[in-house]
Image (tube, rainbow, N blue to C red; front, side, top):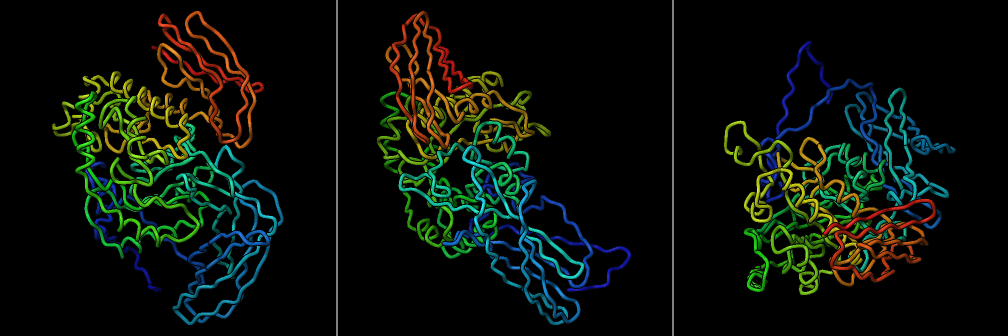
Length: 536
């Protein structure tokens, strides 16, 4: 409501902790204390406005039989009685050229009231928004003008649905997903995700700021938006439905919004690491057998998620019957070679919502973590790290993470997993699961993940002495034809390969001699060549 400000005014901002377990990742020890709930993390601006003024332009795009439509809801505030005409101008966003469309709508309000004007804008022959690698990121701007007041919002037109295999289909086309999880998102993380060849970011149990969504829209990154709900324990189903509806309603104008996750990691079966070997596999199976989780509540919330996005009710460990699996071989249990039997035994052949390992950035000494002013190791499991790395040397730590991330990502891609999400893109604390440090400094795993996520690439399955299959993965929207050349010690060969769009194909079986210290694969398609080196 209007007020007459003094020369100096005090602005009070109150922040309360979310109720009913819906604090998400910011209500856990996986983020530093200064980022936990409740907390005020952003600034507040106070700006004077004319009377009347346009408060908000909310856009909801949708496909129609004739093309598309953008449903606009324009909120207007009037200090004095208002009876006027609102002008809506719709045009392609950015540098795109195209004819603008103009619509008008009546608006009336009593003094001191807010009025909402709803208008459906027809878009003939719409230009669709596509994920990066699949097409261009076309968007539209809608400008609402009332007298001297104006406000502009942007949106994009895209349809998203889940597949029976747990994947994503955008604008009727299956999209092989290469994703990274964000533990504490920043705008610059969109660029970092592109650097590692990801086409999706997962907001891990927290809501992304609008500015991050804007960056994902521009970069062509799909967004998997979790509810802020993680860890074991019951929760209020009604509250979950409310939060899910509000999240989708808030972000529906972003074409990047593709999926919603409901309950993240509902069990803690591997709080303590399980090693490798026969006895450890029996221990693994016993822990999974003892884990107890009723997914009914998550499914009820998932049913309330509005149409237009895919839904993953449960993202969890083996034994939870997850819609997207949390798989941590080489960290929670065993090693990379244990991935296959875990997925097969527990029927986890679909989407993978998270995998990875923690590591230490340069200059971080865990021994100083308990000292005043020492590193904040939120999100870093030192016991598991020490068990698999055996050293506090950051170089050894990062080398282990890089090799594990590459190995898991390659196996999931060659197996044809429709969704593959690495955890995480960037550390939330001074060490963690990120392939980037907290300040954005790349770790060694950046290069290995970027290589494993190369959209078109040749892989050597089970790289070791003996017979190994060469698999070409093609995440491009069109079929490819090229030549695969390989070198293993003194042995060489080449084979012609044709792989359909979004497919994987075994193009050759290579016999690797025991004397070979490495295998080099090179895939050439036209003038482009991608090399993949395996060192033993």
